[in-house]
Image (cartoon, rainbow, N blue to C red; front, side, top):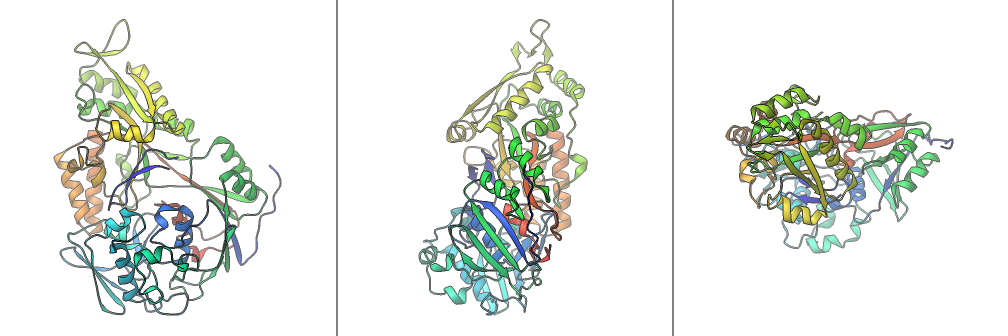
Length: 530
């Protein structure tokens, strides 16, 4: 999946969301998980660029806090912090029982060491991760207390930064960021998470329960993570009864979904994620989309469920909301998903678009309603654009689909805002803050407000939600944001693709939720049991 990363935001513009009988393993103390890909460095500082590393890091390491199934913050190595009156200082108190796998206690020095690695100019991980911590001051008044000081108040800070896996400074002290990147530690890590890594090779990782885990002794004694070259081989292993679980990160094909559904003794879960597919409408395109009535008409005219059924095979959530369904900030009231063609026609008529008596195409001031939907060459994206064009045709709107490479689409059209409409995607990340995607300050080629949308009230609501640490204040700000979104239709959110996770139907304790990353499926894995 190719993305344009949003530096320091934890969000991204996505342009490529890239029958035999079986005997299911039911070993009481063991669980076998299959993943496509292989490991490189089992270290949370480098895990953002490799999904398998992220999976293993989630099992081996812990952060100060963690993100729950609805996107809310809960404690991990520390309880949720005390926040200063100005919202700039976070005080964490590390749990007394928090310990490393070697028995040493987790201390504030470990936190300071971890953050120092990100601030080191020779840091070799994702630059966006380092940028996210730029300017954060760390104070350690005692071994159990960490104070993080920000330059300005930030509501999204905990969800985007507080979950960072902490490294054992007592084992790695003295290593530069350059040395850490090549350290043997990355293949034999010591963490504080629910599982210890016992062995790791090209075929699998074998982990055992951390009996001293600060959130409770894991009930599954042994966990094996097997690596596969692709999903086809992983699915065959699942069907053969060799696996208890398989996470499919990519968009599933019809054949894959059929095979996964037929696997005996397995349950297929569709897990929500905070990434949406959107038909961007260029609000600077005066001929069409500068008019909010026209934008609302297009949003009402599109049958989102039909797109989900035809293109995503049902593995997505139809939605018109820029706040992810299932999260604490979401308000169902403003998520209009049913098509209303009659109302769409009324809005177009009010905007001055009249159907030509001969051609049937909408015309205003002598100009026909014809525009181009741009996207990249991804088959899913192209199919979505084609379905939109087909649905708009009965209204008298003629849309042409034009696809190109990812780099050309981004460089020549989206970044320069030289387009009418475009099908792309937005990964909101672990916090609902929509600043980078929809605040007016992000218009222009330097920002990621691709639609060049601007509204004073929306800006105020985004700012309020972004700068407050009061959850109720943020909820209300985002409720009003969704209300204004429904009214102004800056662009057309279509659907939130889901992850497919298949696991033994005998697995208990797994709680489906919104996954900000595939590794999030291991939230509360200490409660899983067979």
